[in-house]
Length: 239
Image (cartoon, rainbow, N blue to C red; front, top):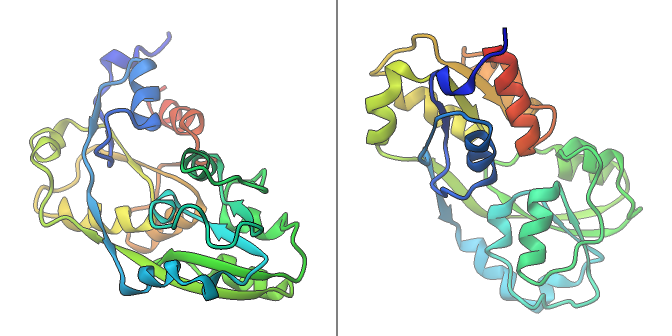
């Protein structure tokens, strides 16, 4: 018997944008979706350094999140710098800002970027979240690169669980945990409401590892950070 998505409990996607690809893909598949951010981005003082031309004396710019893209100066101060994006969503965000992308790993992850790194022993500018894992800078350093890691933003949990999620929480079926910071926020914010049958889909192994450390192991892990993989993970839990 085929499962009808419309008969399933709603899926929470922790993003505000109603046009977010995770949101629209799940809706198009027939799932009810509740979307509201559980975290907020805080720009850090080092983001101002991105406007300093001296910072851009590097061979490669490596971008591991869409949030970083919005903090980049356009045009880039070094027009000859090559650009690597950790995944297709980040690459699209760069392209929309008029920044050409030279490399996207087949495995859309920090570990994949390190494994498939095409730049040799290069000088790398790496603007990241303060909470970003050390996978990329450590991996590229081992590959012979000189890495300038610049922490340009951080992510904090919102003050309380958004009302639309709080009201629906008892009936929620699946939550898409898009990052470790989202996992930490989710677990803190829903503590007053308790856990029932809610299941967690982690967007990648690092996020799954965080959830396990927090005592709420992921019920499924999306094989890649794409809408199609998220949908597949959700369907594996409701079939």
